[in-house]
Image 1: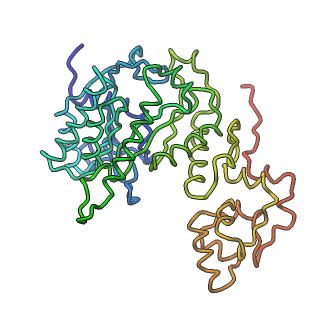
Image 2: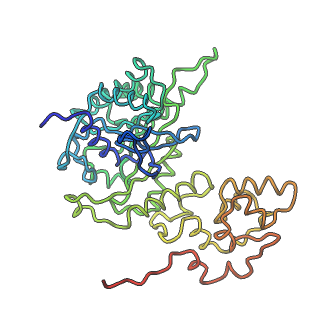
Image 3: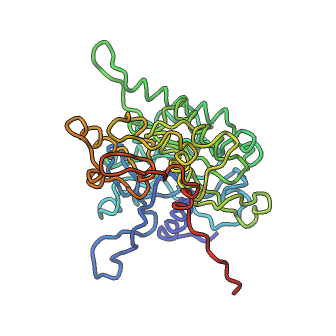
Length: 409
């Protein structure tokens, strides 16, 4: 294989990293200054945006250490049998890229994942060396997120948490049956054991001894995981139930859902079940309801059910539970207000604060940031009554996308 330049490696391994969903692109306009007429860049190889634990949006260099892999997971574009262009960074090259991008103010941190080369321990050891070198030799204080390997030795995971801000261990697929069928080299038991170990180490790191001292830091920004959806027939309800269990068991900061898109030479084995990106979007919306709005997974979709692709999960729930509406905005408790379509957490907070001093009126909701078009059929307050809207048989049609006439040509 011809020797590649650093720029060529970056192009290959930044593109290969796009399948890791633990960072979110901002979707901004691509601009750069390589023509010599400007300063800075909003795009380029490997730059993505993510959110720090304190809510700041930060730019990260998002790359794979290598896309060579000894595993042959059917759903993965970088699997051993895939005919993709391969490349591999050395430890020194990743450190160099991170520091140079940081000095140019392109990034504020590093997101590093990797295919498995030689063995899980060898791969994890190189990733740890990268993080350790950045911290100790380069005095790098930016954000580091490492995608860790569950089969790696516990001492390597422990050291990774010493240098990284966040660790993530992928559960890969929603069910053990799917994992055995599509990624037979991986084990659900080892994945969950590693996630439990990370949780335990984080809890120990937060404890204070009787002398007032704390142990060394360990992944202070927490851990997350990624679940591929659409590669197996698991319904949305089961996916959400499994996500809820992961949150409860391992105190995850986030479950990321990655829409499966068929790979040409694997498409026969993995049929596309639903529009992948729309389904992914609905799962994120449902996950948000579980995390911040007090919904249980089974309320959003039964274990064997699928999410409605035409309307968002909160609106779908409200339409299915019309007996709970209209809600009296001046009397309802916080839990019920959070279930009103068009009411976000900040809107509810402002409503509750305002009604301690006066009656909230319809005009106030505009100032509170309420999406009134969604909320109108489900609320009542001075200045507005939905009348018969909650019982309207055509209420769903007001919100669902309009059907389009298909064209023959």
